[in-house]
Image (tube, rainbow, N blue to C red):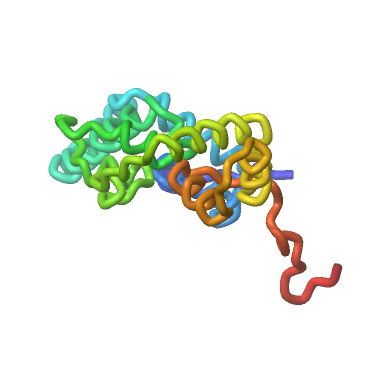
Amino acid sequence: MKRKRFSKELKAKVAVEAIKSQKPVNKLAAEFGLHPTQVNTWKKQAIDAPPESFGNNRAKKEPNHEEEKDNLYRQIGKLQVEVDWLKKDQTSQLTVSEKRECIEADHPKLSLRRQCELIGLSPASYYRQPAQENDENLKLIRLMDEEYTKHPFYGSRKLHQHLRNQGFRVNRKRVQRLMRKMDMASIAPKPYTSQPGPGHTV
């Protein structure tokens, strides 16, 4: 079977999208009609490649397009800065609070808004200061965090019951609010996650 060849333009487009996008690799691969392994390979190549590797060959082949090349090099340099900045954290797994801490307000090349876009955080979320909690809520947060660490599939119902068992008279809505504040969500499968698609029978 003849091996399928992909253009450099497609590889670059997929790699950039994989670096900048918050989409799962499987979904991104499906959009381009590729295998997830191929997407990860191109993404890694783009991250590991030094900036100069993008330029020398093109400079020899297209000596009469200086303006076009300069623009291309500027874009590559900008992308490399963004890639280097993203390398420091696995941003897709961070909570809102952790993402807020990653922002560098005085970064010399990346604006605050651009950093928010890259990390998947709205500027409003960055500027919004979390309200201070009282001592009891802080204690509840600590207990919830400890229990959630042991049982990450626990939702508000289980955590609410856990706090009640600890002697706290707290309603479930309060537990849900604190969970949202902590960016805490159960990893248990949600209802109706295995519904057949149109035209398919179970």
